View 1 (cartoon, one colour):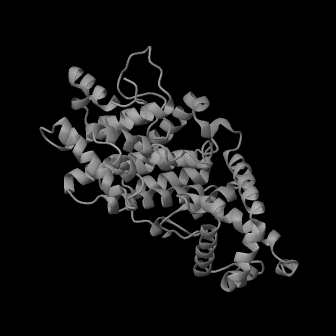
View 2: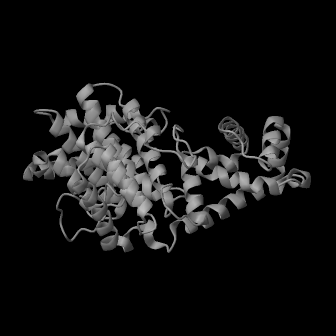
View 3: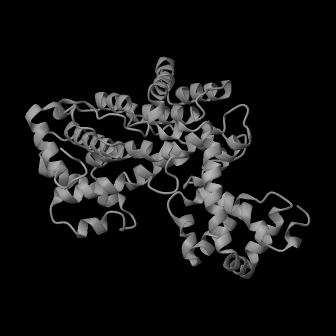
Length: 394
């Protein structure tokens, strides 16, 4: 079975119907298997189901298999006497709800008639979310690790039989904001740690968390998560985030302990979660792209800074013209050199900068998902483009 060629889903399901393993796995066991395989951590180093040892899969192929396996297990654990055809129909409808912009999966669905082939293309598109300039850097730590949201949202969809987008968006918001707080809990941050926190804060789509030092769990609603899988997933992903530099200081340890208490998880499970992340990283560090650099934040900054620099310098004249014509933006940028802008002013600057990026095709990267990570760097380069009077009081 080759998950990189058409027809792999039908072949996969035929193989599983013969050995019946797929239909006997509980969701609790599924989660443990996915964590052991690295899927929960965003790097599938193996598949959760046994396969022919003579076949070598790429990480992308392992991720495909694990995602599809988890979706199938979720379906059969939730729906009694479900059939293969009904399962595929349910998955296509489910991902149709998540395609809010009607662009991600709609196009590939229009080109295919076989439902299995449609689902293959949907899954392929789904795991391609990290194929961008962010590949091999910080976002890779989170992008594929967030795939388990699909599993939880699919279960929610099957149980409640309603559009899962609100649930998926809320869970993503909770995860990203919790991870942000975790990154901000480090006791001593160097310049690149500070940069990583700021860059991550700007990437959060639902900005309900304060970026101030006093930000706490009060800014995140964790009470609504009562399912053990939801709680363990939030905990495990946060543990992964605090290991971003492969060490844990007291501030991060205290944060994880506090998170476990807020989630009403036993302390033994919290310790196991930290231990599991540490063991996984130690055993598979060479296979995890994110940890192949001595300082991931430094690598992220260097790579991203170079890209932004090239984009901005190539469009210097057009940027100056666009910024000059936007009087409100010009005023706020000038004031930002002398004082800290308020949250509302920062939001206004961000929106107007994105509007400018929309008018310059080669800067479209700023308006892609995750593109807001680049905004702090865009702002950094803008003073170099403006008249010297702009910086006279800096």
